[in-house]
Length: 98
Image (cartoon, rainbow, N blue to C red):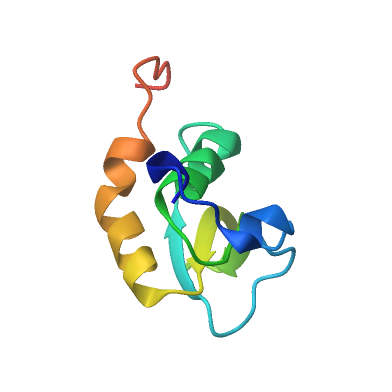
């Protein structure tokens, strides 16, 4: 992990964040309240495996198309931890929408 001073070979070769989400990755959907860079920076600092971050589209119950942010992880344990701590990462002290 980056915050412990350990070099991750996936980071060195630029293979950590994948371009497309593979089907075997565990997905965590959420409404983005901070910049995407803050989310990916936190993932780089705290996790080790490969991940994908982007937008996904799905149909709501009313039939409309909805966009949501999504982070997907190769490691299921990292996805679980991310889902548990997401409220702390994805909150802004300058939330003007409230």
